[in-house]
Image (cartoon, rainbow, N blue to C red):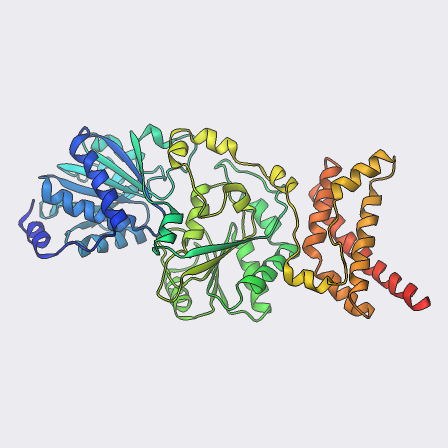
Length: 510
């Protein structure tokens, strides 16, 4: 160990650690001290649990006990800088190896290096330099697979992978192939209960996703997501959800495509809402200005695409909107985790789910069997419900504030599947189901208003109920195209407006 590093370790007292962090560090050091020197260990802890704090303390303690060096790998420049700064806070001098570092003439002056995976791989492959005497290699965000390219260069080092979700980003490269075991840290529910994370309240708005296509990476394609989420119906649903549950809250909106995010920007701007858009084509200066605006503006709304899931920390976020569907468990936790930071005046945050994600993965704070996922990722992924099954089990429940507007109507429920069975049994056409549904909706609007305009305004509030019923109706007809399903909804709304007018004319005639 160099004199400079030793002096700093003596001068700087260790930062205060929480009990669960100390327990996990002791468990990790039990493996470092007793497992083979080239053991590969994976450690899981939820976003916000302090993974960087934990492995910084591990580095500090390791350097104090061993006459070897430490290498920390990250995959993004923001994480590289944050990690280096955190290590300095623990009294660990370190050198960042990024694209600007072409050689290492001062290698002997440092006992810890923080490196970008791709940069280090290129320098080693080009024989620009090699790192000597690395006893411990820590891999941040270990569920990404880029680090695999470097393992063969450090086959005598103890490998510690750190992640919130021990599920590989590539199902063809399972994590159990690179790690011998997994240590699971505290759960989200426990960290919330102990006051370390804010509590999430999730509101799910059912969305028909069967038009989405899955790409070669296993997640929904940008093209099919843009087609769905850019249409007027989904834009209205998003704006309604935000107005209903997050109005006035600092909000992050996650989208799958740039086109969708730009549509969101225009929609919210037209509604008089202060909003900015951010994606990976935004220049560094503009990005810095937008993030500074977001930080300082209490009710700011930021719509983004793919760049704020890691390496971004803004504790004042009060609401997360998932304006997208994903098949990635990791991405699901990363997006929601951006709102989970706890502040003195922030104990809770809101999650609006517009992608059936909670139905697919469970709520953010639900228990997860990470050992099962680590050992058998294929079985876990196969066990997830597909979109058709999720949509088949949709059960629309009218919000209490909307139900109050139909107070004079005793029964507002309508079982489309049951009515369809009755129609088939009676040898009737399927469309009688729609006619019955229209009759009920029209009566609901007429019974609870005094004039035709008020009734038609009330009918517009039934959009989610109408969508739910028409989805069920389409599923009863087996194979229906996306265009036909959309036509069913629009045709239903037009017929409902006409039927309301007819009923008021009948009332006036009587």
